[in-house]
Structure formats: structure tokens, C-alpha cells
Length: 247
Image (tube, rainbow, N blue to C red; front, side, top):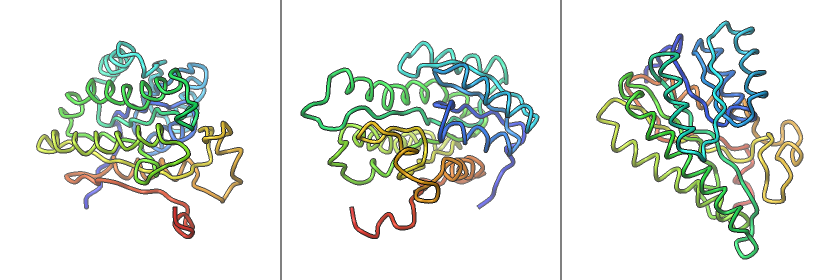
């Protein structure tokens, strides 16, 4: 399996303001790629972009983006093309969890998850495909352990991640003949600001060393995006004792 250099490539990362997204931006910049940072928090994005430019000397572009809004996602891709001339990698990372129990879940929470985890992913992929195809690049989807196994305590979030995997694999079937690589990276618990079903963050739930760190998932994303002439279908990132007690 051949690895290609990411030097001077252009990578778009959604959900880039924290956690896996921010770590992925650092990972790509360390590999020499120019990074387009997309999320809603412009201040956080600016701070990360400044770090990338100072530490790695790469070019960055900050595009405040709510992936729930189709026009905002289209503008993200258009601004990227204007700035860098193309897209080599799209990392569909933006996602969130709201509520848990279906019986008591509000319609607002349900729609927020659907619009972010499903619609936003579709908008970004649709807009980016022709540009990624031109450079025979990669589309990486951040899935989840929850998208592989039943989740009694968070079924709607789990369903959005099952959708992510199904969509990604079907996209691979559509664009594989065009030389586009498609990978799903499935983390289990990651010590980040992502909210667990009880509303607390995983960073609050777990001490360092208990579960995966964002940088570990970012390394898997970079690895997938750096393959040349091949496509890694899925990468699972789990703590070593994840399966010890069953599900």
C-alpha cells in the first residue's frame, strides 16, 4: 500500500474548532497540507489557524460554517476553490449528540442531530465530490462505534452514524471508478468536548489514558487520506478493553 505526500495538498475539515476536528487540522498541517477550517466558532478557528501557520508554516483558510445550512456549506467549498484552486481531502467530521431517550426527546433535539449529522454531511460531500474527483483525492467520514452496534441509550445519534457508514460506502461505490478514496473512521469514546448521553463531555467522564485521545483519531484520518491508488474502507479506533465486557 503506497503512501502519498500531503505536502501542499488542500484539506477541508468540518467541525474543526475542537476535539477530533482540531486535532485533524494539526495532523494535516504537520504533514505539510494547507488546511481549511470550518465550524461555527470563528474565534476558535482563528486561534487554531494561527497556531498552524506559526508552527508548521502552512497556509490556512477559516470559513465560519454551520453545516446545517446548505448555502453555508456551498460557500465553504467555493471559498476553498477560490483560495487554493482545488480540494484534495474532505474530512466530514462535524457532528453532535442531543438527548438520549426517544420517548422524551424533543423534536428540536431530533432535528438538530439529523440536520447536523446527516444533512450537513450530505451537503459537504455533494459540493466537494467534483473537486476531489479532479485531484483523485479522498473523502473521510468520521463515523462512530455507535454506528456499528446497537445503542439503547442513544438510538437517534447511533442511527445517524449508521447512516454515515451506509452513505460513505455507497459513495465509494459511485466514485471509486473515478479514483476517489473513501474511508470511514469509527472512534469509540474519545476524551474531548463531545457530549455523552448524560450531557457531560467525554473529557469530564474520562481521565487521560482511559480512552482514546483526539490526536489518535486524527492520525487514523491522516493515514487514510495519504493512501495512493488504494482506499481503506474503515478504521476502528477503540480503547484496548472495549470488547472485554461485551456490549
